[in-house]
Length: 477
Image (cartoon, one colour):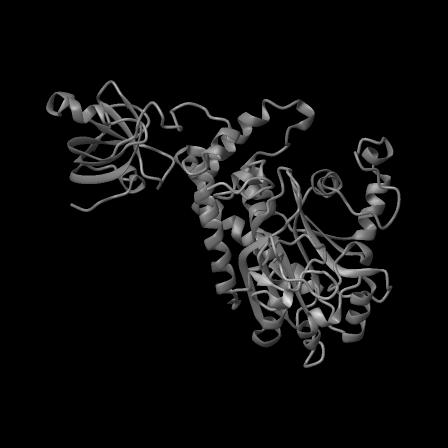
C-alpha cells in the first residue's frame, strides 16, 4: 500500500482496493463525512466513516485542523462534486486540534485576521493556492534562466555599498548598541566592528551580478533584499525577493527582448501548470471586484490579464513619446489624474502607466530612455546628455513590474555621474575596475518577485503573497 496525495487520488476514476492518505481535517459532518486536505490541491477528498464500526472517543478527536492517517478503499463517490471518495477502514489521529481555540475555522476570515495567523493561513484555499503559485513561479524562473544558458549567482546579503543610492538600508553591526566605540570625531568607530567597516543588508544584488556577467557572460541572482523604508502601503515590504539577470555584450534592445521573453515564459508556465489554482483565484477576484464601485472595477479577469501578457507583443515607447501622449490625453486635460502631467522630466505614477497599457496601447508597454535625473547612477547616459538607456515594463492593473537598463560602461562618464550625486569612488572601487579592465556594453533588469506573484494571483496586498511579511513594526513569526 503506497501513500498517495489527495491530488493523485482525485485524478483517479477507478476503484482501488487499498489506499492510504495523510492530511488535515477541514470539516467532519454528520459523524460520517471527513473533508481531508494535504496541501497538494485546493480540493478536499471525502473520507466516509461507518461510525458504528469506530470508537466514539476516536471520532470525537476528528476535529477541524486535526492531522489524521486514513486507510481504506477508493470507490466511486455517492455524492456530487467529485468522482471518487475513500471508504475508511482504518483511522489514526496523528495530531489533535482543539476545536475551541483553533483559529482557522470553516468560515470566511478577513485577510487581516489571517496575517495575524500567518503560520496557519496556508490551510485556507486562498493562501494554499497563492503559495503553490509562488512555488511554481520560482521554479519557472530558475528553469527559464537555466534553459537559456544563464549561471545562477548568490549575491551577498551583507554589503558595504548602497546599489540604489537611496540610503534606506538596515545596518548590520556586532557593536554594543548602548556603548559603541567612538572615534576622535565622536562618531561610531566602525573600524572596531565585525567587518571593520559600516555594513548593511543588501537592497540589490545587481552591482555584484555585473562583476560575474563580465566574466561568465550571462548570470542571474534570485535572493532576498531589504529596504528600511518606513512605508505601510499595500505595495511595500521591508524584506522581499529580487530576480536580477545581467548579461555581457547586450545593449538596451537586447535587454528589452530578454525581459519580454522572460515575462511571457514564466506566466505561460503557470497558465499551463496551475490552472486549478488560477481558476479559483480568478473567481475570488471577480467576487471581490463586484463589491467595488463600477468605476474602480478591472476590465479584465485575472486569467484574461495573464493571457493579455502572453498573447500580445509589448509596445516599445520612449519616455518622451509617452509624456506627449499623457500630456494630451483626456484624463490629463480634464484633470482626472491625481497627478497631472505638465512637463517633460516628471516621474510617472501608476495611474499614468496603467492608462498607457489599458487605455491607449491596449497591450503591455516597455518605456525607455528616461530622464537621467530620475534614474540610478549606473544607467548609461545617452548622447543627448539628458536621458539614460533605462527601460520599464508596464502591465495592466499594476503599472511598472520590471525595471532595467543598459549599464554605463565608460569609466569617465560613470565617475562623473557618481560625483554628481556624491557617491565616493572608494566605496565602489571594484565596480569601477570593471570599466578599467575589459569594459564592454552590458545590460540587465530587476523584477520584484512579490510584485510578480501579486500580478499572477490577483492579490491586492503584497503582505499576502510572501509567507511571513516584514513591515514597519511587524517582524512576527
